[in-house]
Amino acid sequence: MSTLVPTIDLSDWADGDDTTRARIAAEVDDGCRRVGFLQISGHGIDPDLVARMLDAVDRLFGLPTTTKMQYLPVSPDVNNGYSPVGAESLAYSLGVEDAPPDLFEAFNVGPEDMDRNDPAVIAEIDRIFADNLWPAEIPEFREVAMEYFVAVRAFAHRLTSVFAVALGMDEHFFEQFSQHSTDTLRINHFQRSAAMGDPLPGQTRMGAHTDYGIVTVLYGDQVPGLEIVGPDGGWHCVLPEPGAYVINIGDLLAQWTNDHWRSTVHRVAAPPPGDTSHNRRRSMAFFHDGDWDAIVECLPTCCSEEDPAKYEPVRALDHLMNKLMGGRTMSAAEPTDHIGDRIDAVRS
Image (tube, rainbow, N blue to C red; front, top):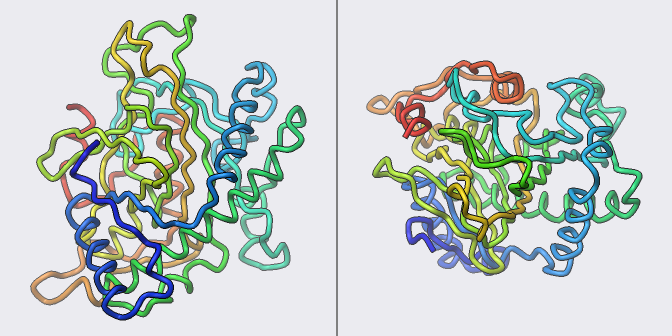
């Protein structure tokens, strides 16, 4: 297991005294500054719910490809439904122009408890808040997926309260930007079949990219593949610890913090040619991305005359769509970071 990514126990946050909460906030701040990735225990998500969710995921991806293809989204800017192997290349989201297709399949679902009379929801009802596509062949999938969605969303909100304290803001600061958040649960499946053969040169299961929003909450099988770029510029394996969630911050939070916190480049590497020992890998990534109409600008605690804001204010949806459409249409997205090491990481 990587020692680069710290493991932090969150179980004492809610009822902890000031000293305990300050210690946890400091640990989070240190991890987000150094590497942008954390492993979190004490998250409160029921292991039985995770097991039921994984059982439903196995059934979902066990469906014939022709069946799964019935659940494609109507257009690339609709963020739900099925994405087949080779349909995306996430390195394009960093501005790369010649990356091969990625070797994963995925299924996306969004919230179902939005206020359909909210003007902010109505404005995006055919796109980011479009109806979920549920596989009729697995009738129980909807119920368990939404139960899991609600649980992991609550966890994401607990994390943003810790983040706010760690950044010197009021504990509830980020809630004002999460009234109709563009939250997405993306379920990923990686498995090399005989028909696929070995990867092309430079091809990965999931191309090098940063996440786009506020925070990602990831459950992953304890199977090698997830790799991150460390402060040394090299790739490092991150193997999920038993019972823990892997957490990383996204571009919008990095921009809020003036890059004091890192939106770290990561990928899912493919097993070497002929290696079938770590063939199958599942992950469930919950993206908490904030309100689509939120204006993200540098926090007052993260800039000064000596450290001025690096980014112009940006509407969250504009940033998200630039990144999403890059990977889905395999056209280079407009680069948005000021760190400068991200394209180099993709090609290394």
